[in-house]
Length: 131
Image (tube, rainbow, N blue to C red):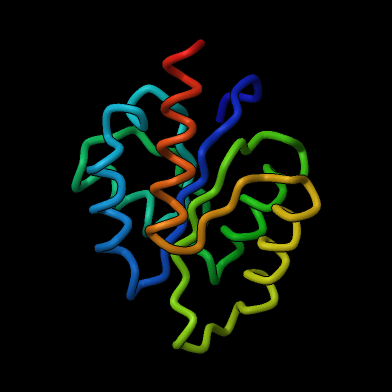
């Protein structure tokens, strides 16, 4: 992992992985020009299905959420898309809550559904085009 870049973090619970793939495909041109980080299963699926380069951490239940949270806390994440499944219990719920909290503390744009993810990624695309 390159220490000089900031990343867009992509995380999706199992029931939301297909939505993540659709989202990534819609924003592929922009995402292909940025640095991506994800939890293991999400990152592997994105790479497999889209060909995009994704730096994968551990899976969420094995500590991947915490690893990405550490990147947020050290100002290495510029935006996060975390497509959560709020209707299913997750054994690592404290890690999920900590990740959401650290985004709030460090003022990181955080999308937890496809509608808000589209807005954030559209805005990041606009900013990249102006640069």
